[in-house]
Image 1 (cartoon, helix red, strand yellow):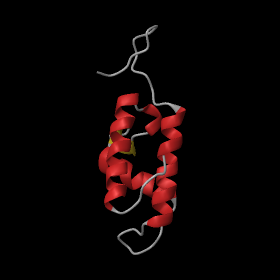
Image 2 (image 1 turned 180 degrees about the horizontal axis):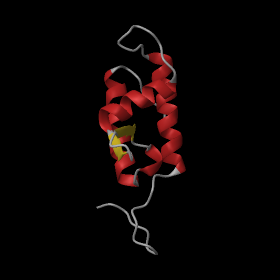
Image 3 (image 1 turned 180 degrees about the vertical axis):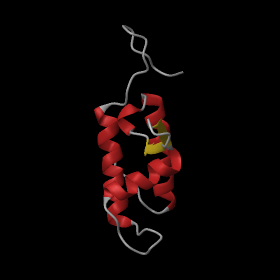
Image 4 (image 1 turned 120 degrees about the vertical axis):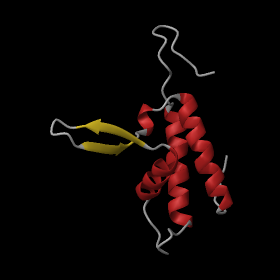
Length: 102
């Protein structure tokens, strides 16, 4: 069950520790794995690729009728959602020989 704030009952957002660990993982991936194009890419590139794969997009309709898609922000995720995302990224990384030291 998702954790909620006792005062306002909103879902609790991700923690700074979760965020730190996630960024360490993306840095480790960036320094260890080449993309499908055979090149190494910065951690931000890997983060965008993983968000595309497992988080998806927020959809916004503009006043002129267009639809704009924006990658979901990890800062908007609940504790549970970020845990699920991190687990998927860590499983993917492990399949590619990348592990974080505990």
